[in-house]
Length: 195
Ligand code: TYD
Image 1 (cartoon, rainbow, N blue to C red):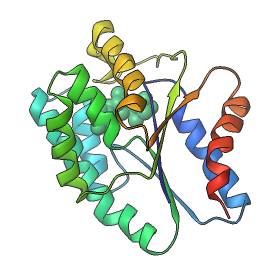
Image 2 (cartoon, rainbow, N blue to C red):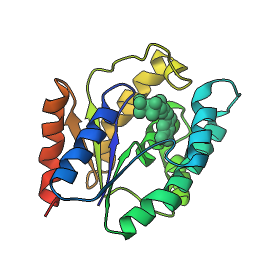
Image 3 (cartoon, helix red, strand yellow):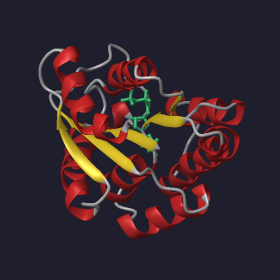
Image 4 (cartoon, protein in one colour):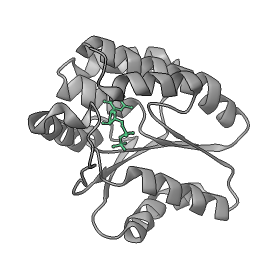
């Protein structure tokens, strides 16, 4: 089973990935956690380029760099883990590209999706949980966080539309309240797949 957690910056995805992995392990499931961009040597270097803010990056280069990091993560981590029967829980995946680059940068949902599907060799998560709630801001914004309020409003709107675009795969989760309460909502939709 391959699950991705998605949502705008600062809604608590990273905490929820950790809590979900912990709960799955307690239920006897082997879990591999990963994050995007990153999770491999190449991916972490690409992450530094993408978020560092010290290199000029055009919108299409940005989409392709995220896709390159994703390709490496799929080949090096995700496919091998799935082949061994582990569950993979990933902090962001293809839908972050669809929303941030396709919608918010305006590159187009279809082209970004196609580029990303090339990167993953067609692999998509079986379930994608989009966390929706109030965002907490980091003290020092990275290059993406510094993209401006209008950009992030388009990001929120893009995530809001995802479940409608991919109804069989994407579920919206209310991410308001304490982390434990959000974790309980996440578990309620994941638990039926654990046997
Ligand atoms: P990260 O620190 O992981 O953000 P968060 O903690 O909010 O998940 O930084 C990843 C940033 O990169 C975040 O702003 C979302 C953005 N991003 C894209 O624009 N496209 C992508 O395909 C991915 C994976 C992330």
